[in-house]
Length: 214
View 1 (cartoon, rainbow, N blue to C red):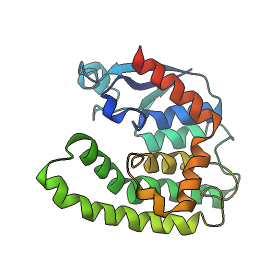
View 2: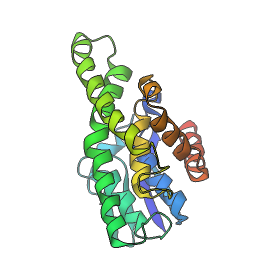
View 3: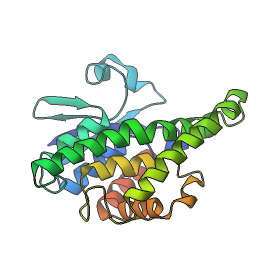
View 4: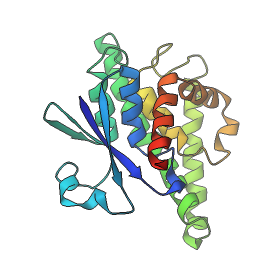
């Protein structure tokens, strides 16, 4: 049984885009048995010694599996993919490309989008936000323009099969779901819609909302 440390309580401003959803999505796709240990962000449970012994940065997600503790959503998703063939590419070349696209999602595509989300959701009227946001929007548009070409002739990052880096890329794109930035990129929009239409995503998202509402 895999234990997932995720949010039990969190500000509604970020519901649906928190990183624990990536681990939960991968678990549902892989059909692995798991339990969720929800942490109350409002009560400071992420920064209590018990949880800091699991993730010293006080962030979610983290998982425990047969005595092994792993944190960082990208590392968790990749690890879970290796526990099942459902998300893992079949050969060494495709596995290398899966790793490449995972780093691209986390290090190249997501940073600008996460910053836009943080500014828009938490400090939309701040002067520094109005000065900084245009540069981040340009960066996001530059990344999206590249992805538009990538998805012009294929359904997923590695072709016609959904694999674990698609979880990370779709999650990155969800960071800007409150904006209209995707309107100029129909292939990227269609890609995100394909990913979010998957039954595994719907299952984990429904359970997530139920947990936060309890």
